[in-house]
Image (cartoon, rainbow, N blue to C red; front, side):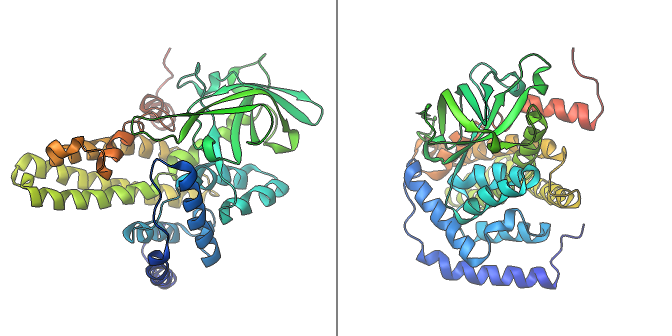
Length: 377
């Protein structure tokens, strides 16, 4: 697919630049990055502005070229990222768009696009580790509802969410991949307890979540009962294949700033530093091209990214960590100052080889589904 700007894309880029130049100076001050209730208000306010200007659904209903232009221009202009809307816009929303009924799409998608409702992700469990299919949270059918009991961990944005994309076990008698169901759970339902987890950087965007006989309507099931593993693979395809796209642009910007800082403090004179930054520049340029390929491939096959997302996620996770290790080398003693944004980002980068499937899991996927190697025994 040709990703060069045509006349329509050039007009889209120019119009977006003009809108960003006009609206960004009018935004309120950014909240404390560790204040997630405050960030929810700020992030949803930004999403509402995008909605009113006609840019809200660029992640779902735009050409690959327009989507990439949007990410390039918003990052270049320093516009807010999706923040608290991450799960709704980039995980749950696309999954519901691909797998939900017409009624489900009508109920859940517009509030995400308007910034009215925030979603969290209830996939991981304390005893399952990287074995997502080993989940034990149970859902028992009781009339027109499922009664759910169990616990989740690393529940992204549970502290501020209205809805949760939840994986539950509805059949424990068969293969573990075959008894899973994907539910949309209202976070104000009785029986839900959320305990925020404080990260190394001091943030609380993750939480433990305990479910004690929570009733979730059967109408909130996306896909068929016990077909949740297949639906989950759709969610993970979005999470690994396209959800990190904007962050590649951000890393390229950080790398440019890092090179500028190295020139100012003299570390640029070290050929090892220059070589390291040059290699990272090539790395992120290659990742951006892979991003373009993944996004265009997803468009060609109906909107769901393919297994190339695992290649991207595997390499991006490590490249991001290498970028912030290089930043620490350039900053020297200032790398201990947590008031610097790069240092907080460095702490955050440590999670990327675990989040959205560990690097070991991604290597298995690449080995088995791309290279055709046999499963390990």
